[in-house]
Length: 101
Image (cartoon, rainbow, N blue to C red; front, side):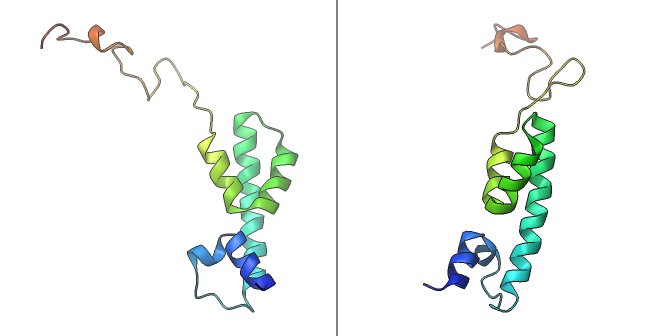
């Protein structure tokens, strides 16, 4: 197993673009990991995590770290009603027409 195979699949680049040549693999991985580090920093800031730590982890881990942070995003309520809850409450029996069935 060559370094380009490990780098290509480990970074996720060859999962998305398997036709990418070995000559353009390293510059592409560096660019993508830099963007992943920026995304990781933004997600960390919005969720109250340590920004510098997650920027470094995002640069090293790339796509996998961004996916992890997306999965662990904290949902916050804005205003009064959460978009994830019903306007009538969380109990289905509280809405209009309860008891019909």
